[in-house]
Image (cartoon, rainbow, N blue to C red):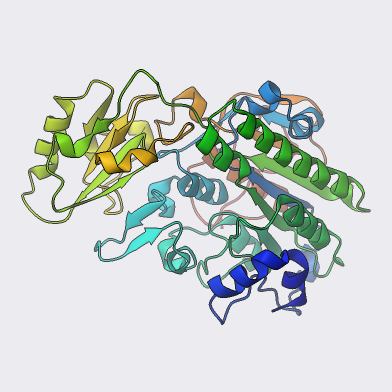
Length: 434
């Protein structure tokens, strides 16, 4: 076990990390010889921070002063609109690639291969670390290819060998590692000598999402989590400001989606009370249920759709081709045969035994539900304090990341390279295609 891992992990988490990781991989896989290419060392530094489930209005509503200060020192978008579905893995990877889920491959937190003989599951390390599931090149792979060293204290995709490449430093996700330890490691990376100092660092916090799921938006527990993460962000900003090269560091703060409560006046739709689910696999989260039919009549998805819609007035079942155009659901076999989507605040579950899926706070409703939007803040050299812009889409973040690091996009993007041009005219070059 490398000394760096022993220094970063608390003793209680050290054994967990050793047990979870394959013997050939360490929690921090950096090579001692990994250096930035000489012609890349004068580029700025970028810290990409994600606060899972941090809704667009949480900072102002609940007094997250350090988070809000990033917008005061730089730019704040009105909101960051998520892609469909409004789940963690699809939206994080859209931020990292500038692509919508059908193009980057992570269409949900759980989905099948094309042959439906294997399943990706966000809690299964063997699939999370298997780069063949990821159909697009994330920003850290593009940076590594260009000769820039990168580091990740968690972010969707950073554990995987996408095209055989991982960040120079990466860590297998472990919720037992405190936010304080994560921030300290980021600062330790940023004080390395220029030859090895990472130019792109990711940092992820799940605390707000977890607490708000279990206790609901506005609860004492959710507010406590918001303030914990806010203090950790404050420590990050303080540490960056103290660096001799702190004025060369950009901080981009995002969230993957927002979060909202269920309507107390509506009971969930229980699917197996009205349709036959034999021969299906249902992926569900409370606001949605995705039904994969294993065998049987090709007309079964349509007849199941009709039976559900005849009995439900708080949502809709639809074939993939019937989904709203802006959801960008394609014919990919990773999508289900039938989408069952609840209206805002309503719920659907496969059976009464799945009632635990309905938590006091949740996400997974349609992307246009206001409470599903997250945050976007950025500060750094050349960004005027107090800059404001309207809502952005999660895919619009990536072109800015490329521009900051002076990288070329590996292909066509779904994100709008000009989305921030009105707010930041001429500050950052538009990314170019390879």
